[in-house]
Image (cartoon, rainbow, N blue to C red; front, side, top):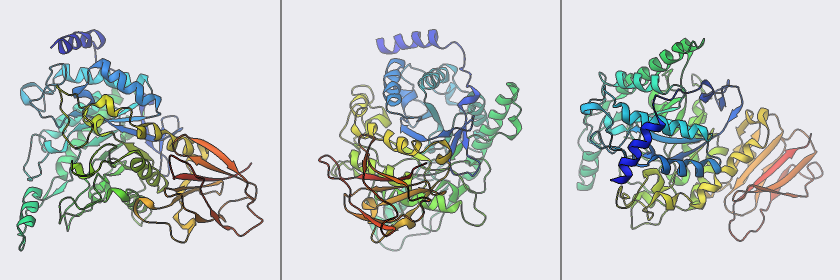
Length: 508
């Protein structure tokens, strides 16, 4: 009780008015649509952490501890939910409900003022919040039943979010898809066996559109009030957060597969998820050991006739210290698992990565907010220091180290690999500078691999092995033009890991 009272008083001292989001908060797609950039055109690498319940469960002091840790580790984005999965009748840590009288068109100022204070705090540490306006179940549930966000209420709520939080990236209606059957019935009928019935399909995309259009209108109104000359042409960075599953006969679980013709969909995303087996047969699913697969499909969609290039993100890969499919009888994903998947996704064309630690994503606090049992960790502060969170920054570093102009020339380069590249999370993955300045190859296995190096524009090449646990380069002797240009490489031997990054970089 003392915790709540103290924080309620502290909040009203700290936060007396809605924080005004500065224009340089904005991140947008690059001109070619493949990358993200800041308002001044500088590269932006999406190194996101998952903290869905940050606003709801942590007090201000705890939020400062959390955000300071993530800032030290190079995180640039934090995913957090406004109207959370806790429910419309659940108060935040200060005792404030999200809405007045459970009416989604009447936001409770105290609740959202506290969110303002955390968004401002994150920005002071160099972190942007990717706002999830509402969890997906508030559009519809797994049984395909409607909820409080609908075509009537979503525009009003969306406009509120847009006006109050312009420039923040937005991820709509998390953990569901617009095209939906009764998942509860599909699972039950499959378990019983026999011929399954025909299920009703509802396309909930009109609600998604209403929410998105409300956000766009609200942001443009906020920009107009600040006399921004680009208000009428402004599109926020916005996507949806699909599940890792979809229904046979419908679009696969990728944002563009559902909503690819929408102007408001400016970021493509997937959820490769947390299971390496089909968790709900016969519903199709992404295998989390192949997180590079949806990334490749999203990237390719932007190159197809009629396709629109968008930056792509795997927005929910397997969380560190989460059990396989959340099953306590299975092993949990460790730092190596999440590290490998993130490297493979980025080298396959992603504009960054999204990390998650299982107790952190739910902000579990024993005795106050219990862990959901999906992993062994039962306290967010314990999972805050899991080793995988420190290792994500080295992916950002190796990409940024190539220079700002080269940053926007990075392309997937699996065609440079010769022979067997491995499967699933044993797959060797390559990327390169399309102008021939460098080649990067990530190997998760420690085994030798072959690279066709003919894309390099010069014989003067510096070769290094890059350590994905420490972000350190180790040069080795290499002569590009004296031997065959299809070269074999054997990674170093290290006691604590077998994965390495080969760096071949043309000297100026």
